[in-house]
Image 1 (spheres, rainbow, N blue to C red):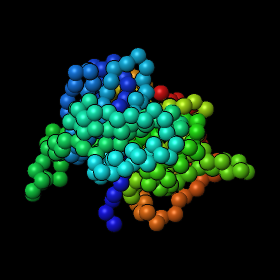
Image 2: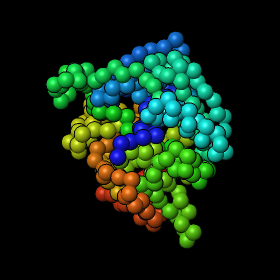
Image 3: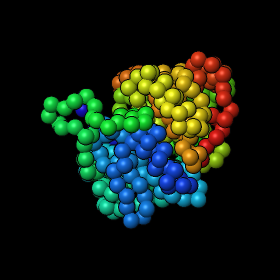
Image 4: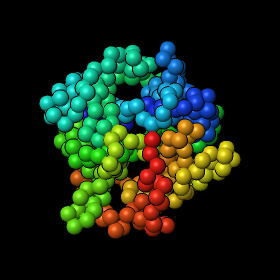
Length: 310
């Protein structure tokens, strides 16, 4: 079945404290390609195998964190329909249309705030700039790759208080599926939800947290476990602040390493994970197995990983 509706995460805008240091990190350590700068001073990046103009936007500010997360939808008609559906649902606030061109090479966007306090937006049009190779008879990767060189921006993990309202909007209105969840206590309160709009283990995930609008990490996909280990080497060579890993998740089964950009925003590169077709039943983890769920090898929790957010 062809994918319709919301297709994938399309971009994330992050606040950074020092743009020069951030450009060095995202361009040479992570290995994204710079694709533009705008009159607002924002700097745009893409992973090498993304055809869209950008997937990461950096904005210099006094406080680190995420401004918004955007999802690409399949057509302008779908954009209009989903905007109306979000409005009619009563599950979002601060609804607004942002005109085409406000973000480089991007059409109009519909932005709204979900119950966890995060700004989410939908868009249907963004200029295709390619991946450095022809569409006919290409090689398997272009020349000039550097750093970790992920193939795409994959997902974000976000923290906020009203998990129930946000999950309801993503599932009932935007058409996402629940791939995995964590439940706690005798009432089996949902404390984490891993949501997919594709056949990946997650395109966005949310954790129940007392404060609204907190950012845990932006994640980028690598080809295999060997590339995750190479990323660990780069983290040491470049003296990047390491959070945890290399290791493996029980949730999603992904192989992973976490580290921080110079502003304190957490990044992840990972590989692996299962295919989540629409008829795949969701997996549930209980809080007494949370150590194994998050860090499958160590089987114990890391307090800094759980609590450090921007």
